[in-house]
Image (tube, rainbow, N blue to C red):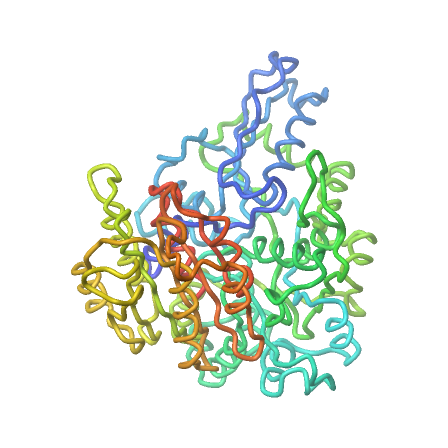
Length: 592
């Protein structure tokens, strides 16, 4: 039996630390549980456990309850369906490990976001020498193609140019910015996408880029990935990434908040986002806008998004219905009946209200009215590559993606001596930082500062520990291990100075960022003006330096860190429960 490629074992644990699917309908969750089954179905002896990817899990819970309260029967019997939700990456790993450690019932039916995950599970099963759990192709219950989403004025301008390809929109346009489209006042062209190691949509976007590079819609091969023309095409597109996201839904929520507040610097450096068509609809309908208590959806944005469909074609997220080998004969019959139920008009309309295309890839009129008309003649879809090609693609992407210029500021105030179990806060944070550094690219540039306040050891609140330069993981880890913890928390002074330090060493070919790890709030009386800090670190669209923060432990001022991050178009990660700090670092590193 052929061994699995090394990447397979590396990639899935990486995704297991974060959200691999998109968290849309019921907010930011990883696990979803259906309430206890209706007592009215107690006569049904067949129990069917279904596990769904999280972006549609809340809807599947609703549809399962609708199914359970119906009078459906098959083969003289009936079934109770129970739905739980887990991100596609976590579910893939759990199925490969015998479904241990999830705390959820073992499923007989699996509903991941994409058939890409069934391919990854096949690789893991082959590697373990066991029978394949997902050997076949599977029917879809809903679909959502990948699109390039732009604010309406920009999207309509691009669409008026006629059919354009991935490279023409995301690559070549970056040389002159919007001047190439006759609007130099719009500045440079950058776009956002999810990290393909963490996100189904990010992976689909990367696959679509490779297919556009070879000018085919199927049969992508490893030799294609090694072609210098192909790698050059992909590198040119990646060079225009503003920064990578661990969850595009968070990015869209921030965009909606800024839009409804009348605009804001936090989104001005991003001209487009590569994501599912479904999310364009959800955004435009107010599904990702801030909500008042009791509201199902927020206000529609002032400036909606427009979907641009590249001329070469696009990748489709097919939401397969997978019956697993764990299903017995009765459960297989129940699964067939539940699949038939999900593809009936009433249930398909429920998917359509959330922006999905139906199980046969047809778009409802309301969807196209919301996101923009598709090309004449319909869409061309790329075929999913062989799973081995996907793995090779991810290996290659690590060298082609945009590199980073990062200054890490690590809190060394006295409060970091507080105990977290048998370790101190500083020891827990240091260990997490070391794991995060290991996930960076060897070509990234990284520096390290420590900060607290003036102490006997230093007359400045922040200190350069490792100069910003070529990543030297061993040296940074060694320097962190030697740091002394004392003093207060000079948060504002450090963030301002660190941002200025990176700005003075700005590299337009890289993602330029400051990373702040702190367990507290600003305690430095000499610099205590938050309004001035927010003005000082606000995003400069021409020379963006983004601030990313990790709020460590419950004493952290997460609300303030979140404001600092947002105004710079960065992101704050909540690790106020120290047990989540490793996960926060993996999410943060996915931005670079």
